Amino acid sequence: MSQKSFASSADLADKEQTLEVLGDGIYALTAEGDPNVGAIEGEDFLVCFEAMATPVAAREWLVRLREHTDKPVRYLVLSHYHAVRTLGASAFDADIIVSHENTKALIAERGKQDWASEFARMPRLAKSPESVPGLTWPTLTFTDRMTIDLGGERGDLVLQYCGRGHTEGDIIAWLPRHGILYAGDLVEAQAALYTGDAFHHDWSTSTLDKVRSFGATTLIGGRGAVTHGRDAVNAAIDQTRNFLTVLLAEVSSVFQAGGTLKEAFERTHAALSPRYGKWPIFEHCLPFDVSRAWDELAGIERPVIWTAERDREVWDQLA
Image 1: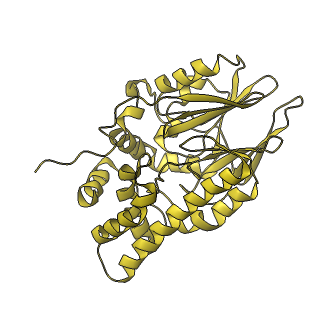
Image 2 (image 1 turned 90 degrees about the vertical axis):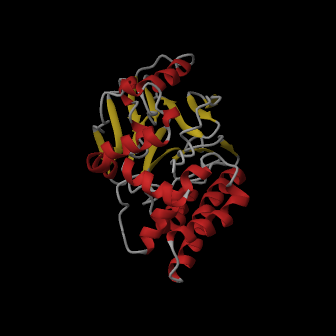
Image 3 (image 1 turned 180 degrees about the horizontal axis):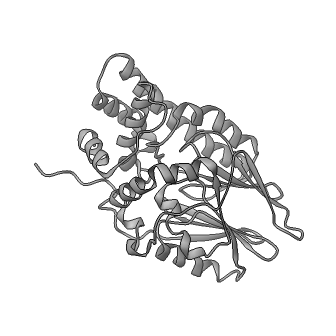
């Protein structure tokens, strides 16, 4: 019997990218549900947020950014360790690559496996994969909070760890003077969540509470359009929380009743699909989301490393 392809492996059409200027020297690039990236100008330097999946893809983003600024990249900030966020780093020629200390540890522990896993699952994002020189290694890490003085009258950029969520190393970037928050994959705006490496309980409660506490009026999520206005920002956070809450409740119900992983997937799919089913990457992510939630309920504290073989096993079992 032939294997069913991963949902995203057949999604090869280019997505339209939109570059928004959110303020003086503040940029976001979105792409119809593909991973978002951003940049913030300092007085005489740039801070770039996220690196994209390959140097070739990153250079295309930098060409668009260079239409607005020619300042050198001093800081490249990685919100977490996933390959599609980190492996394009060499294109930025950044002086400093910043992440949470957990992200650096995760790259060492499972970076190679994640690279193989993600490029197989989502080949369209891996534009010219041969251009990746190797794993990306942060050169500066922190545990709780780091502040970058942007210089002049530009104020500060605050990098903050909000707790375990999408991974155990996610950070956000906050511009208090402008009320602008780059949330990474802790918040998605009208895009489904990938939770295969997540800590669902922490993420859906204290971590999102912390993200909401910033009171942002503009939010750039990990995927989806830029969200404008306090009410819309809170709605994006709430929809992320609701996805997690429903996922946990449905998987837990089957788990506690002694059911099977397949039953948990089917029940969760039925519960989430009316609201989230037409959003980007829903079908692709859900088998891996349910598998991780099931593991958490079984007492597996840290996510099991995803390998290409484990990806296929879970996909064939659930998709």
